[in-house]
Image (cartoon, rainbow, N blue to C red; front, side):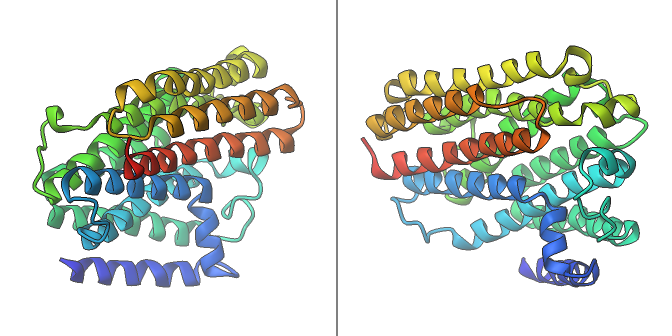
Length: 324
């Protein structure tokens, strides 16, 4: 199983080393670190839940499958954010001039090779891992391409753009990865076999994914308007979108603080309640002192929302590992 993956990953590493003045660093930034961290934590958390539910809590039970699932997930992540940067070079020179292609640190041909490899690697790995992972990987790649590439270019339509991000983060990542691990451990791969903790993560990532999808465009109004990308921020203005995004995350946090201990009966209820109430307090404090006109301050706030998103997976995994 590993031979095609090792060969393709070696080629990917060589592309990264040749991509810019400091290859690995440029490749890391090209992959948008906050999305890579979020993807990594989501896979690790779902693995921990699967191990607890299906393998007696032995975290080493399926390490080999975990490794290649992570590699596939990282590659899909880089493909999605990479193809977006390739299609948005001129927009990024206004909105995100520090990105590697826009900053001139990574050439377009090198970026295309990296993106192509990141499309091939997960498909090759998925073929060896089974139908569930193959469908998940193929669907994520197709949605990522449709989001950024003409003639479809879903990002031109704000509602569909937000929905596409939500589908990948909520359904494909959570449900697809869980079903893959369930098959790995010989568990029930029907929807009836999905544990409450995974449904809870899906319920949480739905509003988080919406918030991330709309908040990311708030500081990019100038470039999006110039290139006729009619995001919600362009159409409605920064403040309504900001309020909607923060409200979605706050609803998720308060909802989990109240309902989590009742619905996820195999997790530590007090931990779920306390951590989500604390997260809600932090979110409100950050939002109240934010100046929407300060792009740097908003970028920092957006990263904090991502950190709260990361924390959801870590908290749920720990709560399940600890138990009631």
